[in-house]
Image (tube, rainbow, N blue to C red; front, side, top):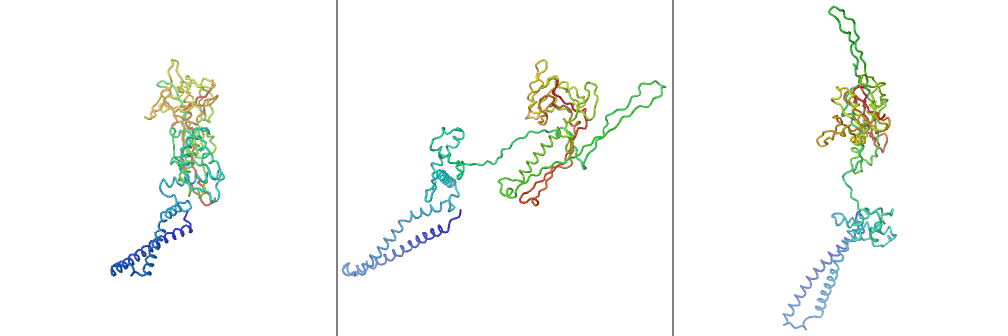
Length: 460
């Protein structure tokens, strides 16, 4: 707070008075020296006979001495008045306590004492609100113990009273506050199918994939002179993946952007990017395909299952786990060998963290664990039946009829299309005083090869 005009005027008058006193004392000292010199000359002239000195001369010298005594008496109070000025300058209203740590501690001590007076109903006109440094230090030392103890009996009564005064709404909690430059963030688990699947960037709203899943007919074995007959040809198909639009539009006041203690626009951009990334990842597993990607787990099961190697487009083979609510070691062997060899070269297991915990306990008939630990530091993944395991939190937990495990060559099985990366439209005009951050992205995804992946269904 600035120094008031009254305080400034008081300081100026005191300084002026000190200056005038010092100047007057110097003049009186000079006059006294001159008059004493005249008196000494007069005495020398008459042989030091005092009767020759007039009464007027004596009165004049006496008056000069008395004036000097008065001036000296006035200067004796100078140190005390200087201390008073320093006290004025250090008052909170005069802008005091700025600078070093000692000044900061004095201010905090003052605020502590003032709040204590408020809490106890003792803050009245004329009350002494000078800081109590000892009480404030005792409070600071006791507060961490109070928080750890979580009980009033652990602290001395005098200190406990000071701690509890912080509950008064006029004073607020008297807690020494230190703010960290690090922000503690909540972690949201997600999936990274994008790292395993094929990713295509497109220039339009959709992409088409020709499908060649048939084969030519075989005419048979013939003799040297036997005429061949016409055989069938393969049929072609087409798959399409559309780029769907997703958006987020948070709003922030202009004042918050200007006054917050962090870069609000960067914080918003970071949070939006993380959120849209998680929503996108979930859609690759459970999306309906209507205005969003089609999920890997949303397709029906093949009507038949076995070793015939057949294919049903639009459906994915589901192999049962062998238990109504559990996964078995035999089931993992069945799933692994249900995939054609051409796909096992790039195959991965997908399952969520809790499923990994249970699968790590599985053993074969000889009591050997199926799970082989990896090395996180060197980037070597854990393996199950020699195939890498990738954690995906969008996979279901183990429960009756759940599709808790996926296995396959996901680069061949699933394709993601990107039409437009994350874009931002910053609008500070249409909703004043709010600033709108309109973020949008266009992305799609779908299964394009239904035999390149297998799902494990928790079932007998």
